Image 1 (tube, rainbow, N blue to C red):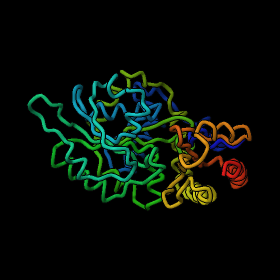
Image 2 (image 1 turned 120 degrees about the vertical axis):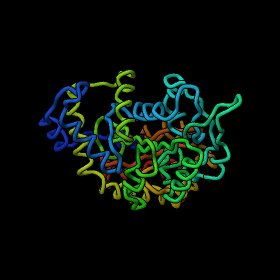
Image 3 (image 1 turned 120 degrees about the horizontal axis):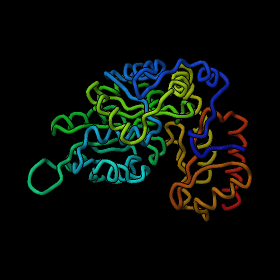
Image 4 (image 1 turned 45 degrees about the vertical axis):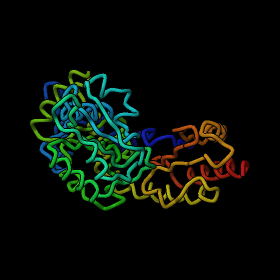
Length: 342
């Protein structure tokens, strides 16, 4: 079976499992698990921030961060296809009491001036904007990378209007490898960040919230409130630490393999390889006789598993468990289906 549904399907390597088995642990709710403490310090330093906090999921990490910068009744601006709004079960509203307004579904192709025009100041009877959230890389933008100058412009806008800037950086490691931007250069632009260790880097569990020491102290309270306080979490932190040490630079191989898929599928008019920057490939079936569900089902019959994202949009995600043989199998199956419908 070739599983290209997501980069969350990876399994720990033998070396990662050994690191987990030998991890020194304590009780993280009391703050005395040395392995997770070291991981948090390491990740904060990588992004040039004061502190970080381990969370069991990317959704929890994002929602903690949003609650740090947007009070109940405040407004968050984000893209119409933003993960924090589309794929997190309405948590910003339900858990944080956060109002939201969106710009169009443009993926990573952001227009800072248009976003600036949306900002509402306090006063009167409108909801004041308290934060902007961006996604790096962008999931429904096909793994697109938001350029550093665009993010810098949003930082300037946020400073001018005295609002916060949050980064959903679940796959920011891919942006770092694809564009060569240092992680610290990203970090200095954001008030809060979330980064994921179980997407792309291959850890089984875990994301981190990044920010100032004062914000992370409050994040610890919010995490406990959301049920995210865990005990001997060093077992998971050891896997995350292993992933950071061994699995960042190898992401370039995933990007190269994603390009191979894109070029193969481009012959059928469903992918533009120029838009594939990292490890995600969006397959636009609107010009074919297939819909996403049918394409996914037919591929699954031949042991190739991909995801249906929208009625005519499927997603392929390359990851560290996919070698060249698996990729060749997937390309043969997917191009075969498209050729049958041509």
